Image (cartoon, rainbow, N blue to C red):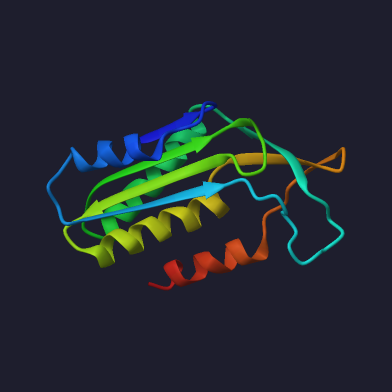
Length: 154
């Protein structure tokens, strides 16, 4: 299941939704938060006041569904759940939830990490952060692109 929403989500509710779908042995979840410091290498970068996420309705959901289907094609997962928030978020707000279910933990972990790596680099979200009163669009990180390389070689 793929959900794009402005409102916050409850981790327990999302976990329970995965758990009721199956009696398999492994559930892996990941929750991402808006970081206070986007540029950790630059001490003078300042704290993130807000992060505004835009998306293209319809296209974004399809892309996220494609990512989930790719994960299901690589690993034996019986269910997955992706929630990504859009709109205005503050530092420390929850921004993304990924959950995967499998009979075995290795598949559940790998699928969840694959989904997150693809979300970070392939999902059509546009992010504008405000730091010290100045807003700018966030560019893709080289580290996110590099994370994809290990999946593309497998």
